[in-house]
Length: 441
Image 1 (cartoon, rainbow, N blue to C red):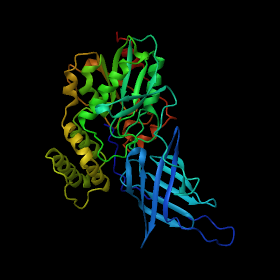
Image 2 (tube, one colour):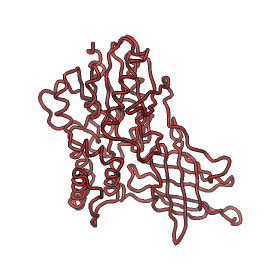
Image 3 (cartoon, one colour):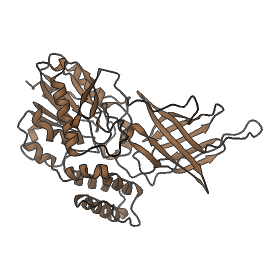
Image 4 (cartoon, one colour):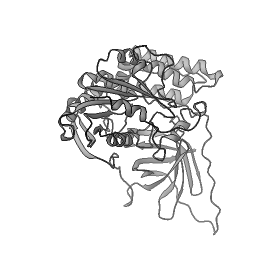
C-alpha cells in the first residue's frame, strides 16, 4: 500500500543565508520565471519544472512529470541575494531545495528528503542547456520488454533470465505511480524492486517486473480503476508465459504492499503466490492507523475525525472533502485531496474495505506472506487467522523494502524510515524466504 506518512507540517523550514561577498556587490539576476532541470538521484535523473513568481512576496510551483505531480504549490520560498530555497509541504520526508544562482545562469544546489541529500540543477526554460524531461528510469539489469496491458494500454518492463528453478516470477509494485524498480513519488530513492529481482536471479528464478500504468502518463483521464490495475497484472502474467525465459516454467506472482492486495485478486492466473508486506487490514483501517501513530495526543481527535469523514465521503461517492477544522494538519488535508481526486476516487472506493487476510485464507495454491519486523508501513498484524500462520515468513531487521534496518523498532517512524530505503542499504537476510522458494515444485 505504501501510504508513507504525510505529516511534515511541524518541521522547520530550510534556512537561507547569503554567502559573504568578497568583491564589490554585483547585480544579482532575479530567479523569477520558469526553470527546467533535474535532481540527480543515484541511478536516475528525476526531471522537474519550477516556476517562481513575486508579488507581495515570493511563491512558486513545481511539476515532476514522471511522478504525475503537476503545479504543486511550494511553501516558504525564500530569496536572498543569489540564494534560493523552497519546500514541498505535506509530502513525505519534508522535501526541500536550497540553491544558488551561478555565473552561467544555472540554479544549482541540494535537494533533501528524509535525511538524504542529492544535487539538483535548473536552467531557465528556453536556454540551450536546459535539461528536458528524462525518460522514466529503467533498470540497469535485464532486457527491456513492452507488452499490452488492460485495454491494450502500453506497459514497459524488464526481464531477467533465471536458471534451473521450476518457477518464473512476475513482480507487482506497490501503490501509486511506482515503476518496475519500486521507485515512486512516495519513495523516490532506492531500487529495491530491481535488487529483489537480482536476488531472485541468484536463486535461479527469472522475473518480469513492469512500470505501473501511471508512469510517464500526463493524461488526467487515465484509467487507474481496480479493473485496469488487476487487468495489467493479468496481462503481465500472459506476457510472461510467452517469454523464452519462462518456457516450461510455472508462474510465481509476487506482489509488494498494495501490489500484494491486487495480486490476491489476480491470483487465479498464477501457479503460486508470494505476498510481500501485505496490508494486514483494510485500506481504511491502515490509513487510520498510519495517521494515528504520528499524531500528538492533543491533535488526534480532530484529525482522525477528519480522516474518518473523508473515508465515509469516498464510500458514499461524495466528490468533496469534508470541511476543514482548526487543527487539521495540511498533510492530512492533502492526503484527503489525493484520495478524492476524480481519477483516483473510484479505485480507492473499490479497495477501501477489502479484507486482505480473509482473501488470503481463500487461496488454494502455494502461498507465502512475508513481513519484515521493522516495517512501519504495512506491518504484521498482532493476531492472524490460524490457517495463515504456517504460511507466514518473518524477516528479522527487514524494512518495508526488504532492506536491512538496524535501528530499534521504537525509534523508526514513517518519515525517518525512508533513510533506510536507498541503494547504499543492503538487503535484509532473506534466507527464510529462500527456504520457502526451494519448496516450490
